[in-house]
Length: 93
Figure 1 (cartoon, helix red, strand yellow):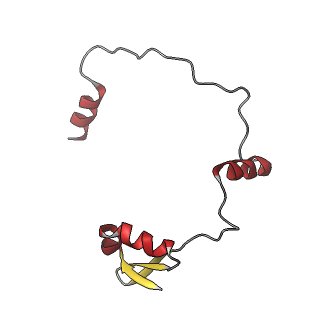
Figure 2 (cartoon, rainbow, N blue to C red):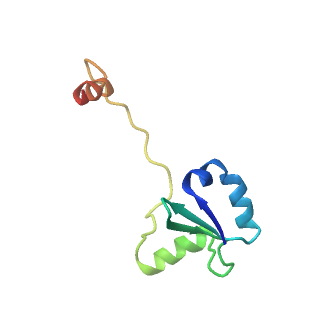
């Protein structure tokens, strides 16, 4: 297992992901403490998006849409005065 610090992982993420693709496991360390292991998923546990959605629906954690389609268009609300973003920035000062 390859051990790597958080900063080193961030700076060389592509390199470490290639190692993971090749089958290596990467142990991520933060201040000499193990915080994560990055490894290639098992083929049996890797689900497609559609499979995961179906599983969530079967568990009752996700409800299907009543009808397909996009949201109706909306009109932006116009407000007089300063933009809200500017008011928020001033309020934080």
